Length: 361
Figure 1 (cartoon, helix red, strand yellow):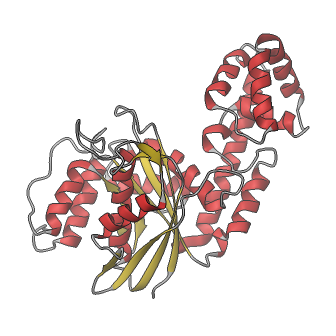
Figure 2 (tube, rainbow, N blue to C red; figure 1 turned 90 degrees about the horizontal axis):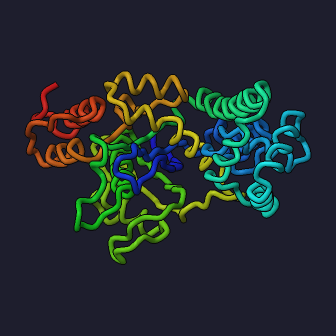
Figure 3 (cartoon, rainbow, N blue to C red; figure 1 turned 90 degrees about the vertical axis):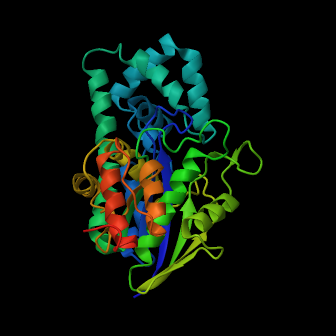
């Protein structure tokens, strides 16, 4: 039976640093899923951290200094917060004032500023800093648990889709060539999703909700903010079709890009979920575990399986992707050495799906 789905996409890692491990991740939700109903999920996430401003941002919720400042801003400072603020006023008053001014304007504190503040806070007495750290980690864990609970309740109405590199940096454009590391991984993610859903009975539509960032524009040859035209081009490349549709004997799927999302006070709960997921799985997908172990690790961590109808929704760029491209055309050769094990195994699994006569079981 066909369905309408929403895919919320975010990333994690420094895409400008070829030596940094990166990931693009999506949360796929069947339209009408009660556990991921936007207002219900937002209410649960807000309730898990009432002092944290919306949207909950994973890069900040693990930082003790952010919680000190948020609680003080909300008039809910604890005794440990008061001791921390007193030290910061004496040690780095200008930096503290600048961060507090950002909060007063409704802006997020800069991650680098929080790191600097925490260098000072580590000089607190032996009890206060550990207490602040435990409180921050407790809140961050409580936020993630909201997502885990929703995923358990959603069952097959939610899935995790993710793309990373077969080998570190293989999505980075070669010198002198156009391209963008993020868009390369996003395209592979959409390709995998389209291939999987098209093999699920019925006609499916996926609405793409992608969080904004800068990308290297292939036409302008300079960095520009991500735009719906970039999403449209990625969806066309992923489906190899102008209408962004894939059809098989089982069913069909059409990808429908939506306006790029801003991560601001109006961000939907699905965007917050995508941010939480991308950060939670980055280390896992950039390790060398096998596909089965990786899938088990992700499912265990998030209660959100990276499979659809038994087919893996984990995909990779680089040599694994190139091999699958050849498999689609019936040209199957040996896979390159040195790939992450899960990347190799997912390529073989999908090779058997796309070219069953060429790739033995």
